[in-house]
Amino acid sequence: MADCEKPSSCLIVIFGASGDLTRRKLIPSLYQLFVAGQLPEHFAVLGVSRSPMSDDDFRDRLHSFFGQYDDKQWHDFAKCLYYHVADSTKAEAYGGLKTRMAELSQSHGTGVNVLLYLSIAPHLYEPTLTQIGAAGMVAEGKHWCSLDRNNPPWQRVIIEKPFGSDPLSASRLNDVVASVFDEQSIYRIDHYLGKETVQNLLVFRFANTIFEPIWNRKYIDHVQVTAAESVGIEGRGSYYDSPSGGAMRDMIQSHLLQVMAVVAMEPPITMCADDIRVEKTKILAACRTPSMDDVPKIAVRGQYGPGQFGGKVVTGYREEEGTRSDSQTDTYTALQVFIDTWRWGGVPFYLRSGKSMTKKLTEVVVTFKPTPHCLFLPRMTGSHSALPNQLVINVQPDEGIRLRFEGKVPGMGMDIKPVIMDFDYNEQFGASPPQAYATLLLDAIRGDQTLYKHREEIKHCWRVVQPVLDYWQDHPQDDLPNYAAGTWGPSASDIMMARDGRKWHNP
Ligand SMILES: NC(=O)c1ccc[n+]([C@@H]2O[C@H](COP(=O)([O-])OP(=O)(O)OC[C@H]3O[C@@H](n4cnc5c(N)ncnc54)[C@H](OP(=O)(O)O)[C@@H]3O)[C@@H](O)[C@H]2O)c1
Image (cartoon, rainbow, N blue to C red; front, side, top):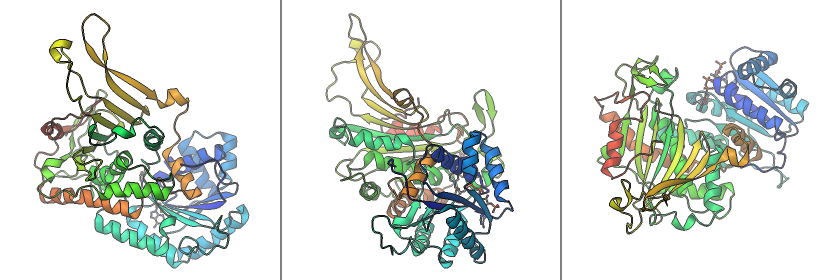
């Protein structure tokens, strides 16, 4: 959501700097911002983790991993990259870390502004935050003591997902982080919200007049939000098969409910972060809590077995390294959600996410109600009866928006066929969307929390999914695995839709 003004100088400290996220996403995104001239005039990045490395080792490691850097630009960028060996959970690490930060702040002229990025395993968030607080590293993030009201100094923290593994642990983590930082300084990341098409949803809905009057229960039959991955768990078996893993926790609780909130929210009074987050929070607060009796009707748990993808044999989930042979983990989840508001009363939102599915895709599909009276019956029109209008918002890949409506096939008869009005992001703007992490990092540097989650949002997302997780825990399924890798998921999910007289959009 960033504007064009250069942000104020700052030091970026990444905890977990020797890890996968840092080298695959964070550093390439910072580099992209650097090349685009969007980073502050004075900045430095300090990576922190326990593996012994020099600054140069760290730079070489990052450079050789990504391999798509321009030599000259990388050379200039790398001068601002540093590494510090420390265990972020240990009090004794912070004396040296603070000294290093002070030196860099001095040599790079970054001032007191600091962005701390927790790119470490979730169980390390709490001990690390506690030590950050105890070390007195946060003055500005907790107490706004600046005299310069227009440009106050800041210290902010970005916390990676997952944020807790159930309502209790999320609430405890919220309390710990709140004991160190003010809510305005806490950036709970959801990289889905950083995706261009999700942001474009805000523009689509609120910069156009024609959709708003029909964006409600009167005209919309139901909404589907799908995040399908064609790959399996890719060696993350021990994490994915742990009590924190599974599609419900990993995808529905975090990303898909957020995307749904953007689709369903009321128009905010301004585009400021606070106003947008208030509206998103209201939607999540209005989501119905499933009862135990509801669960079998509104939720489907799936797990992939062996199958095929692209002509190759794919291993089943239980045969992947690090998983249990009797695992009950959901690699696929479908969930029906109701938002109990005047706008959405009675309109189901179907969220689904799965691994090892037919194709990789994230999309929002809005299906409108049929015409009140059907003039074009199948017998008049050949084999096809009029289909309701459908709006497909492709979040990734092939970012774009497609509207389906009925058209007359040229000829003497009255044959009708669905046609598509297509907005292709790439074709229209001639540019690929930026990396979601680049958008989110720049927003955090600028102090824009629009695309980050408020603690209340986290609370409600857990409230909605936890009853299903509890039910699943108490009711093991003996039909798992129940879908073959490379398919659209278990038949139970199609049955859930068919019960409501609906079908998944499987493009
Ligand atoms: N990778 C992704 O694509 C991705 C996507 C979404 C969310 N995330 C989230 O991002 C976070 C990082 O993920 P990741 O994939 O980068 O994990 P990772 O590859 O395991 O990296 C974590 C890093 O933390 C460091 N570390 C461990 N204990 C530490 C300590 N006590 N003090 C300082 N550093 C410590 C480790 O390095 P040392 O052993 O050298 O200390 C390791 O390099 C996780 O919360 C994950 O859920 C990752």
